[in-house]
Length: 162
Image (cartoon, rainbow, N blue to C red; front, side, top):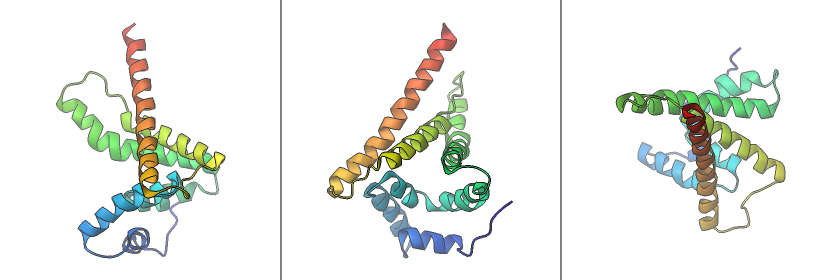
């Protein structure tokens, strides 16, 4: 079942990032996301076009059937697979003839979701910190989850080669 929203994609983007020319809106996406006071707020600003479709066509239809934790992890996993693995990572692998097509985006986004949920659970936010600290905190979140993903990929590769 797909839930319809009274918010159009244009309205949704304007609500998240403001109005103006596209280059200004894209710039706003980066600035607002990295200045966000929490990881959840970061994702409210990041890629509102794909976020709109994931929210109204994947996340919300699951609302009555599954708990929020599962919805968040599943939404991030689908996003990682569709937007990152399928469109970017796997074509890159095939282009350079890698033997293994590790689902880097999917695993990375699952880690992003788990860490976000953990940070929400412990009440972590950077409201009281400077903009510079908030930017570093959001970058650290992305890099730390990517490092965990690479450790999993290396571990799998080592296990397969043994």
